[in-house]
Length: 314
Image (cartoon, rainbow, N blue to C red):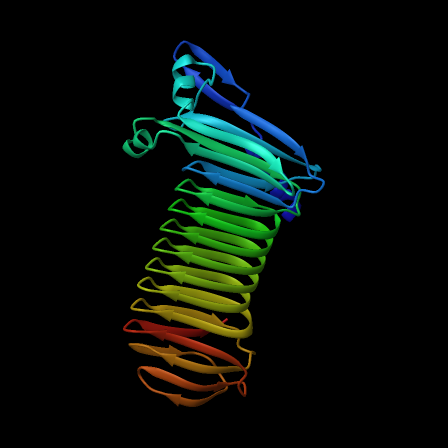
């Protein structure tokens, strides 16, 4: 299944780009810039961009292939058009290799035009890499997607959405407001957002999440979990626990489904709390549950300043 998903993703991002005009069809199969590098000795893909969308996926070839497409108002353009060339000159675009890194950089030369939105050119960066490749991203707002790559991944975005699928390794991602969507991840993930929602589906390993207000949804998680939200709700479904489970909300509600055969030490406090777990020994009141399930074991801490907490068995 994973191989099928990777092949489909690689096929989709490798499709040529088209632009249609009233007088007929104009076909721009060639990217604005394309370069490829032998993958031998390359350990890291480093992408820095002023707002471009970035899509990176793995493939079965032993090389790194970088394609950059120029867009105007979200539509593909002919980079040979004189008017487009003049606008493209406002950007410094670099694709190169240095040591064990392949580096892609797109930066605006004219800060006043960039800030005032006078230049409506943007870029789409598409990169195909071998499956084993660490990555580093820095973007001022464009979306970022990473598919089927194993390694250490460091992502920084000023607001664009971040999507991770079928990846392994160690992930650190920070966004000033964009949403996170992560699926089929094996390893450790440390996520920080200033307001966007976080959705994680099928993670095995350890995950830490800090959100300044967006909701957090965790589905089919196996491992250690530490998540906090300063205002949004938290919903989680755990297949198995490891080391600890800690969910904290400053005001939103918490709803969690826990494996019924797991030994747990419960410390639950909120505006109102309820639990459907069997084999419980301890104290239950309207606003707190403190005690052991199945004789005790993994620490489970759930707390909210005013919202409700509901605990069900999975």
